[in-house]
Amino acid sequence: MPLFFASPRLPCKTSMMRVAISVGIFLLFMLNNVAALAQINIEPTRIVLGHDDRTAIIIISNSSLLPQIVTPVWTELVQGNDGVLHPSGKETAPLDYTPIKIWPRTAILKAGKAISFSVLLDPDREISGETRIHLRFNVDPQFGNGPRWAAVIPVFVRDRLSEPDVQILGVTAQGDEKLLVTLSNSGQASPHGYLVVFDSYGRRLTTLNNVNLFSQKEAVTFSVAMDTWPKGAMKVRYIGDAEFTGILFAEQGF
Image (tube, rainbow, N blue to C red; front, side, top):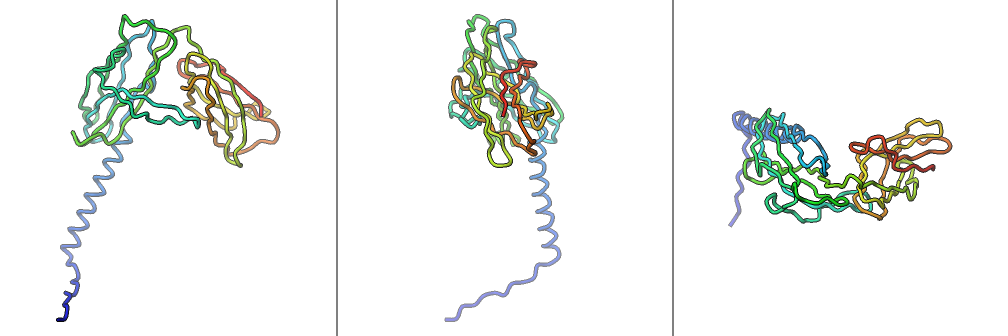
């Protein structure tokens, strides 16, 4: 018995218009999601608590056209030898982490508005050395379908006597595009700052921002992009930022 196949029919103009409208709506939906991701701002991006500063306010603003649900959770991150922070999979609900309290537990961030989260270190808690935990804000623009993205900021509890003690263990070139800088911190506090490369005349060649050493007494290597290489010697400096502004942690020639 022969098989019969219907010949394809050319789409009419009305069908083509419907497809075009559907594609247009889909693209608009995608663009709105991208815009929502790019228009959420969090300040500050790191928090340091101590004897004299046991409270902090985090402000999250939404300049997109979509409302968001924001939910905080405590999480632990591990710094690899390549300097990158990796999730450990350990998360703690705000109510279950007793040293630091945060509220509200969840909030709706309306379009064009800002909300604030309050952080409080236990007033009776003794502070010795430094402890660190990361505060993750899950953001869900779909009202309950699960977080679409998240922002993570470190929260430090630090004794005022704690100080970083940083050494540059080595500086090597990786091809013609990168400089590898290996650092180690043997102090009780985690340094925060940036790596700067200078030529022999003191001219700045390149800068790597947001350099942290969260692992104590372990070698951590950071990759610094080099657009140009000078003739002669260079100098690498690790300079403090935020609460360490103005501190030169370490320097080494290359």
